[in-house]
Amino acid sequence: MSWQAIFLIIGILGLLGCATTVSAPETVTYTQEERRVAMEYALTQNLVLQALIDECQPINDRARVHAQQIQQQWWQRNWPMVAAADAEINTQTQQQQLRLGDITGQLLLIRFIYQAEQRFVQIKRDINKSTNGENTCEIYLEPYANGKQDLKSSEYGPVLTFMSLAANPQVTASSPHNVPQVINGFKAEYNIGRSLYQVEAMVRKTLCPVPEILNIFNRWPREMYGAYCSDKDPSLIVCDWAECSVISGQ
Image 1 (cartoon, rainbow, N blue to C red):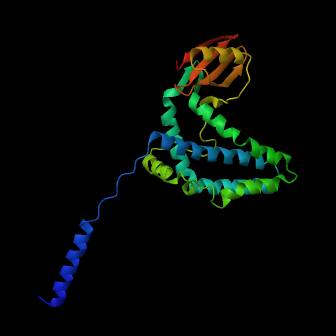
Image 2: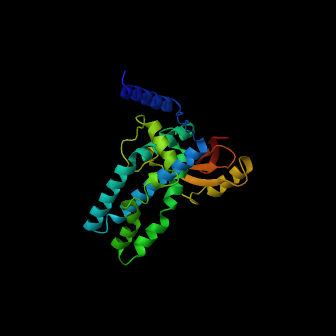
Image 3: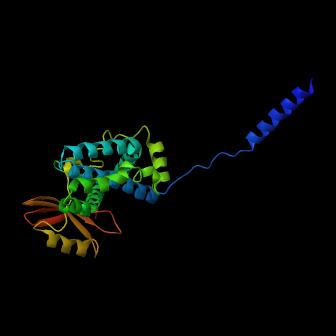
């Protein structure tokens, strides 16, 4: 055997030896709280973008086309993470699903969408009071266009990447529009309803001293409220003709 062949065999064995010493990467795990925070961030970004598009499109045709292009481009880059976050929130809130006749909703999801929409209030005010709404829209849309608002680039990128890889191909959301959304289009509102003060008093007495109360259905004589306490699951309060009772979550 030639010296060249011997050196080649030694070299190959050396490479194999090095390969066997490389340890497999540790499995990454994230707590439910870490997943929840990342999920809320991703879905909030999608909801705010959708609300921004809805506000900018009616300004004129140029603003409409520009807004739609930016939205489509952002979705193309971020949709797997948004869909995974949508699957995650449905998993975490499925125990809170409510059925009352033909009314179905999810208390945690309803509150989350309400809170996300509140973040858009100031943006909407800026656009409406601006003398050049198209320019104001461009300013707010720019971070979505240049990638600064991409989910992967955020501090939650690693968690969302993990969630999207774990969820694929189990994700079921088929369209980014209005993700997440509540069945039957529940829309929470604050500080409305004829029975609000009665509900607040009842919740403080029976559930917790400092609740958050949201009206989620308001068609007199029927009202529905979500009662949120920091130390327990949310509760559904149903009122008929101002006669109120706790239906779930006690």
